[in-house]
Image (cartoon, rainbow, N blue to C red; front, side):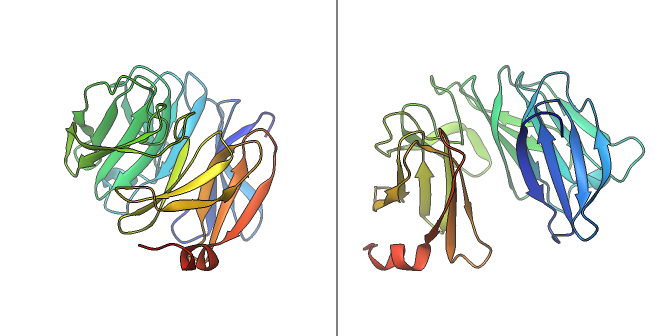
Length: 242
């Protein structure tokens, strides 16, 4: 990689790693051999920003979705000689987060909209009205979580205040109805439909969160400083009253 790596994802079986970088490259690596096996040098016209694994039920062998700073979304089969499966231009600004729910791909954009894309039919399903703020992680820059009913993404169901004055930059679902949120501030919060508490402080703010497969550890990546911190979730949750 010649430029900064924007995101990295493991394949569902853990045998491959996908990456997107600031030089517009989309690459796939074999974990066992530690070798790059394919690289698309110009994956988007603009710089790619977000990426998501796609469910095995996706048609045409779609493995991953990527999105760039202009709102373009593409799905890929990196095994195919012609790897681009779909291209969408339904949202106008940077796609800050991509997530899947069933056969739907959800995209949170800086234009304030949440887009839902039907992977089987390969078309836009619904696009919400603008929330009036940038959607960074299917949470927004005014520090609220916006809640939508599944398959009814055009209408906002509920808005939850999370007390992040600089907005929500990332989140992780810990378990049903319990969500971890973090921002460029120093705190990580536990939230269902109300704030349960604070996990702890990370000086300089938080850019990304991840939860280990066994749910024992929370991992946070620093925003201002390139540091990674591990949190014992068992110890944290033992002090939280649900």
